[in-house]
Image (cartoon, rainbow, N blue to C red; front, top):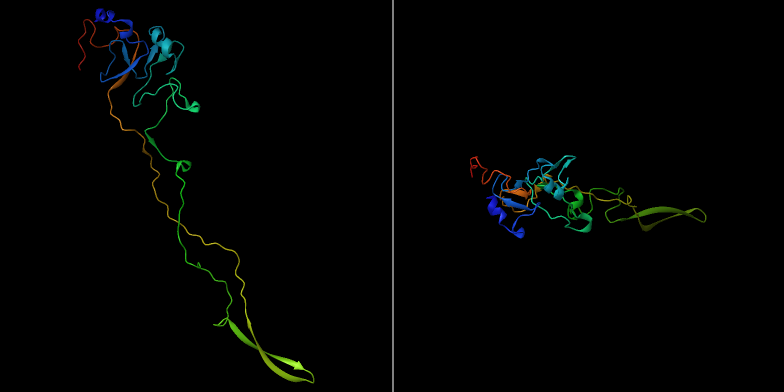
Length: 209
């Protein structure tokens, strides 16, 4: 296996830090599963020089990316205000809308034409009535007369009619995952082609496929 690998030209060999997906479920041929595990800088120095502490770790150890349940994103993509750096994570499986995220909308309703209220006061059915009056003239003769007039009732003042709408909805989160097919695991190349459990090491039985 190693002799075959050695016959590959430089452009045919994987480069340290390359990633791939595979239905294989374990480390193989120098490809390490991106499961977030901790590695020592001394043992995997070539890989450390590429990814550093971007995915966690400090001092003498660093971490592999943890790709479980995530899709890979490209570094530096997006608008200038949201460009991503190596190791950044984003996104959620579900999301619940907040009030600012809801579309602008209105609620409509109706009330009675005049509402439920009164302005007080009363007049005769026709709105007019006749009043009699007595006027003293000259030497004391009484003269009776009448005049036609109206009564005006002031309104109660400015007011509004309100109505109440019933609330609806459950405030539950919605699925935020794009259509997806799960194709195994993500791997990163560590630069050690002899590392891993597959095909298999000398003296060891091959793992079950």
